[in-house]
Image (cartoon, rainbow, N blue to C red; front, side, top):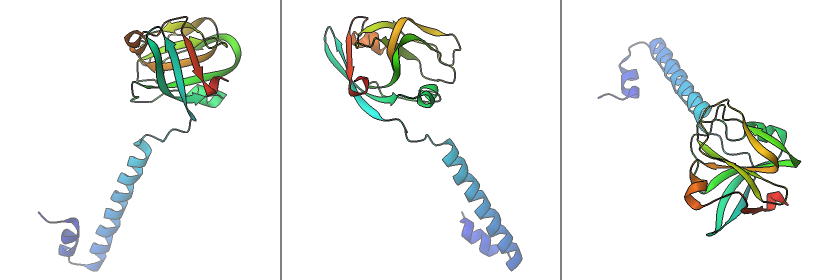
Length: 169
C-alpha cells in the first residue's frame, strides 16, 4: 500500500503535485478543525470537595461549582460522562424555590436540594435525560447538588443528611 507522499510522487506534473498537496493540506486542516470542535472542553468551573454526612458515614465527592448565572445556566448540559464520585454544586445567593430541567443533558442525574444550613431537603432521583419537565425543589433551597442517577439510593443519601463544602461557606 502506497503512502500519501508516495502517491504524490507518482503524479507527473509539478502543478498537479502542488494542487494535490494543497488538497491534502486542506483535508488535514478540516479533520483537525472538526476534532477540535467535537472534543470535550476542559472544565472552566472551579472544583471543590464536598462531603455528604450519611447515616452510614461521610461520602466525598469532587464537584464543579456553578456560582454565577452563566455557569448555572450551563450546568451539566452536553456532558457525556461523569465519575460516580463527581458532581456539580449550584450555589445561589440565598434561599428560594429552585427549578431545574434536563434539557440538553444526556446523563440521568439525582438532583439534591440543600438548605442554607447544609441540610438536604429534597432529592429528585433518576431524572430523565433531555426532559423539559420542570423539577422543583419542593421548598426553599440555596444549594443544589447533581450526581449520577442512582447514587443517592446506592450510598444512602437521604433528606435530613448534612452537606459541607468550602463553596457553601
